[in-house]
Length: 140
Image (cartoon, rainbow, N blue to C red):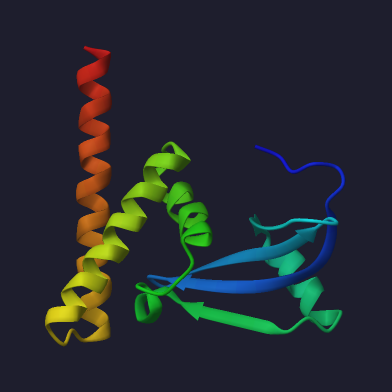
């Protein structure tokens, strides 16, 4: 779903998302018109990111393993969609399930950051496995 042509770019920010030692470069863009606004994310190349830093953009680094429960869903969806090559909606739902599970566990017990990410990753993988098995059953 695209945005209407009346929306104009107001600002953009550049991010490095570090996940399991791999660096993903993303650009966050904010658009507004007279009555509404939206934010979009996109994966960019390392060179685009470096060019933006040369132009004076602020460097924003997110270490996913440390901030998995509070990281925005949209960029995580882009990153994990690259990894799993699945429907974006299914990946998004799996991410939401993983984050909610970590948050719910944190309400009842103290969890170290590293363990939070492992729990999130396990739930994400289980959700994706369920979707893949569901697709195989439909194909048969």
